[in-house]
Length: 242
Image (cartoon, rainbow, N blue to C red; front, side, top):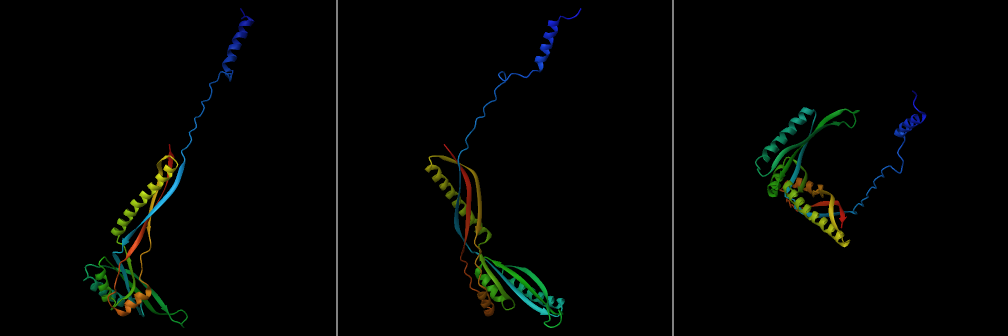
């Protein structure tokens, strides 16, 4: 027996409704995003400086010699440097070590680039916190070596102590500026970023004319340590809050 027409129509309608998209009126509404305003931020910086005593003296002395062959020039110069190091070894308050050494050819002025000799330069380096002992040793060594340079600078420990003190002062200055800005605007604050860096000025170096005069006199060099300046810079960002 065949199915009545009205039953076949109802079945087809039920199947169609399974694939029919939901009415917009029946769909669930999208949630409304809650926007949160970011707290205002302020970039600021502060710095501080401190003095560091130049309690470390560094001196460089050298010898130069020319000879017809590289072996001959090296033999003579090594002998002179070894003698200087031996004399310096008796000064326990001065740290002595070998420095740089270089050798180069000397060309004849008229010879089509022909090498007529070899020249060599060799250095020794002195370091000491005892300025009087350094001065005495320099005077002794100038009998056989030439004085290239004397540098007065803070020792690593002294410099670090000055940097630490400057860091504390710079951070306090940063904090004071942050409190001033936030308080003026009737806000509180919190630090969101902080960067700390340090630096110092180049240590004083005796002029070349002064070094040359000391070499000519071959006498103890009077050394005055003085001071260097170290600085710390702090930069960062604060966020103003109610």
